[in-house]
Length: 372
Image (cartoon, rainbow, N blue to C red; front, side, top):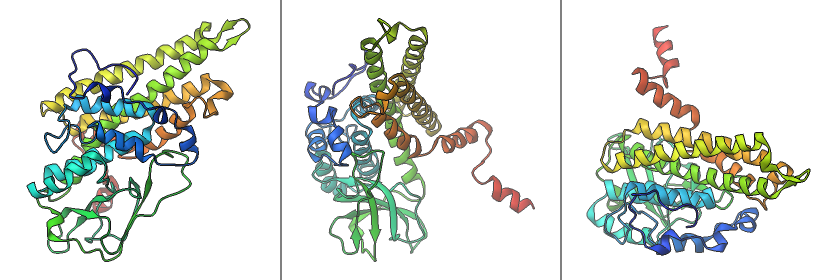
């Protein structure tokens, strides 16, 4: 996959071809990005290398560690956040719930093709609506390309939140594409529209009831985002560093300037600290000791710091920073979306605030109304 090698002492279950995954078409996505083209070949290659659902044991998956999962996310986002988003949704929001909450028959049926990407998946991350088949869900990664969808909704019979596996071809199910994006342009993003979709009993995930199911999936995906955002930051740092070494002004490279070196030092420091935190969290996750609040902390920190680094790198490139030739502006715009989805900077601050104080701030306004 290019980029930096795994940290010393970090095991991976991937063969050398997977670690070197970086086809020219992936690392130079400018044309496809400008045309808003979702490159199926790249993601199909990811499946062939065992990069999808990588922590799953069996079913044709790699069976690596949580640290290995994070390293994949980091390297994919070094190329483009869109490819890491495909990886995250397929692995954490579709394959993970089927593995964790599904039946053995469902696992046997869905996981092998999803791991190879010919059974492409997409999952809405919107809160459940008060019916089995909500009419419209927006901003769903993979929706236009997916064949399998995991949808969380309130079941009318018992009013419990449950997971359902929808399949392309079901009557009343459609997934139009959302156009006009200036971020994640290489991702197939769309809607899930449901008009009286009938879901057979065999497609109900029986081992998930309530918010624990969807929240568990989101925590799994947010962990990967924490790693991935730093991969994008590394790409911006590498571009900025090479640019200031090559660009000469008044007979000397820009890198000779004190302020330029300070900016590079700040960028390297934040990335190094972020990666060390992700590595520690990954090891805790493998030991079953990673609390959701720790994942929120790192998702919030990595995305915020990566966005700051991308902006700094764009500034260091001057006018060239907005040209797609250097890729920094592409990463910057991607990170704007990554900073927003699966919990904004502020939402994760509230999650941390609840853990720190023991007080729920999400419903503070309602509490005031009741007291009044």
